[in-house]
Length: 259
Ligand code: MG
Image 1 (cartoon, protein in one colour):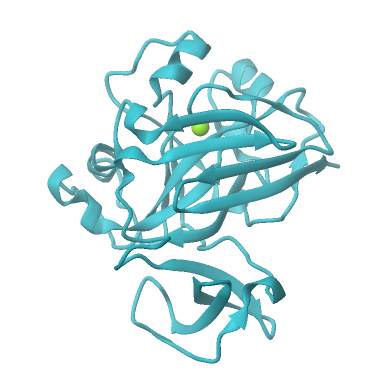
Image 2: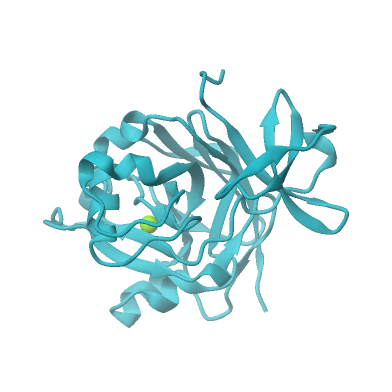
């Protein structure tokens, strides 16, 4: 059930062009313009089941946060960080709902990581904590796919986090949510693997926007991947991984062999 002021934005293919739309009651109303600028609805609406959805936006960068749930810090044997631990995932890694995660030949272990994705709505630079949420458009499901063996081997995380298809996001961006206590879950082949509330975040969404925007300018459509809860684990080709967030939706992707 959506509350007043909440919208669900999707991006879909219509006549060979990617378009934004609003989703309600199983139907998508196309928009003229961009969800990051002026837009207007352009009827008629279309049944969601007839559409191919893509990632709900195209970020210029994805700023991800390591070790940001207490439970995950414990399972990895890390102490809690005193400041957010940032890394970047490239926009070339983004895929949408239903697209395949390709298992790289050079990796021996590839993990899912369920995360709340924060989608920026406005250019943000030096934003104070109290104003941080004014700069957020909405929230999406994010899978911070990670080649765990390469993360350990390299000593820094670029290769392990950056393979093509390692940033599934979607299926939608939902606005007007309170990000302080959303349930974040993952399922592997239908079995629940992760389940935690964003209330367990070490650094919450306003703190992350404040901290990151004091380092780099965030642009409309940029995504903050806020960290993963306990319960990470490996995937193999043939697996189906789902990330679900209360009020946001469910992101489903299959794993296939890379080449
Ligand atoms: Mg992560």
